[in-house]
Image (cartoon, rainbow, N blue to C red; front, side):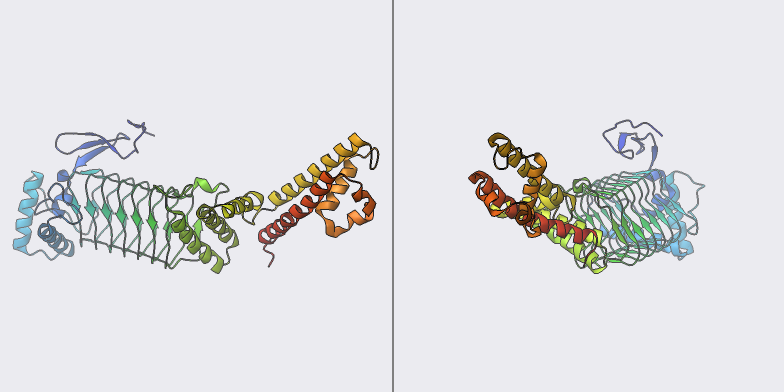
Length: 442
């Protein structure tokens, strides 16, 4: 494994640029200038986009001319005269008078390429396998409406600016493993016909998958979303996995999305590991988080996946607690502390145990100091008295302690006994709720 030149940067970040357009990656890999790549030269045969071109400011006429020539080459529609003109420009750009146009039936190899100009591949048709892995896109990059007829590889690729894949069609497998998107990325209305992998991908900006369609398995394993992840109105037609995916500031949005039954999220015991830990500011507001969690809870309730439903219920309750104020927030806090929002068995059981033991200690202390009643009382006698208070419906108090016994107790012990009975009632209810939820008692 290569040593990183700058440990604070990802492996595929640029740490040095060379004259002519080449570059050195942080992991030691060398990138070739885009104008030395024959497929890029063919894709921009009539010229590259100007410096500073963006989503709304690129040269549309130049992009259309490049696209039409590329697609004619890909489909074998270049006439003899057209091919001759394209070949001449191709050789001039490469500085090689003996070079020939690539074969469209073979793979398009853009790997290890340093793209220093904005890239506009809108509407391009890639007839064969395409390799973009280990490349670096320095500026705005667009594959709007692009068709990838065969497998496409964007593995270990760095997008330093906005990347657009909206309305693109991936007819075979698409691989984005270990890639890095430094700014926003758009997959709106994209259609992914085969399996797609976004494993270990880092989305630093918004990841927009609205109205996208995933027809085969889709994986976001160990993917990190620093900001919004919007899958609203997307359609998932096969297994979808977010194993160990991290949503650092925003809950993923699946409003009106058609989720597949086999949709997997990591549900850690410590919710702050994979899910937003705060509300507001750079984080998604509590109200929006609640709505996003509610959508996921409803989906898992519909598909009878109880653990997932309960997890997202707890997340939803945390949002409601953050939105509440005054005494209501205190109640939410107690609900969370004593039962983990109705899920835990051991928390209310432990709280009840503390209540009983503390009462036994108070009783033993009083009788040990006063000697009456009854003289020589032990801690275990105090446990019996305290247990009778906590479980009054069992009748232990009437059986083992008469009315005269209680009348002889000091006022402060009588008050504690009453408070103990009142406190035990909600704790027993929470215990029953935890048992019901844990063991699926319906």
